[in-house]
Length: 195
Image 1 (cartoon, rainbow, N blue to C red):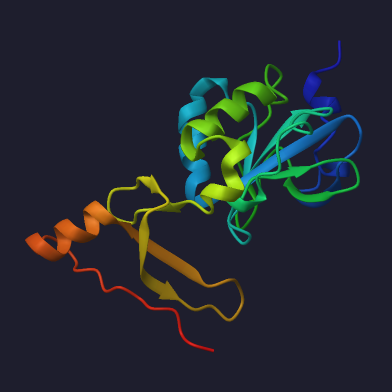
Image 2 (cartoon, rainbow, N blue to C red):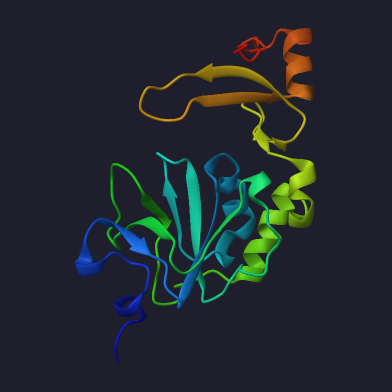
């Protein structure tokens, strides 16, 4: 009997440690920003199938069975992206890849995919209804308490030559308590530069 891992459709060919893999009609994937994808992973717990993270792109992706997530509403405004046939993803091999894209939860004989309905429920518990993503807008994570919020204030930006800038936010309660109480590092609100 052949192990299910021998036929995982999204692994790089030839046992490569990492590779660009084209999504085929037998599988799909959903990706979310890493900054709040960890909350989704925590909500899923043991119900999560494999999940990979690309720290360079700052995204996490769950492989899904064929067509999984295709009928979800467009939630790109919240950072939720569906990857279907013809799209490509950078995928680590089974043994992982140390310096970049890696498995946070690798595929196993018992879990090759995540159930799309379960994943959607977990995403919506973190972000709110996907149908309202465009209205609600992007989600930030408070650097102090780790809470997902849409009522955040930019408190720090680090510029990068080789990647996208990295931004840190504070939720209003943390910003208020740190300014009022003076506990911990005092946040400095960053105003976007005028162009």
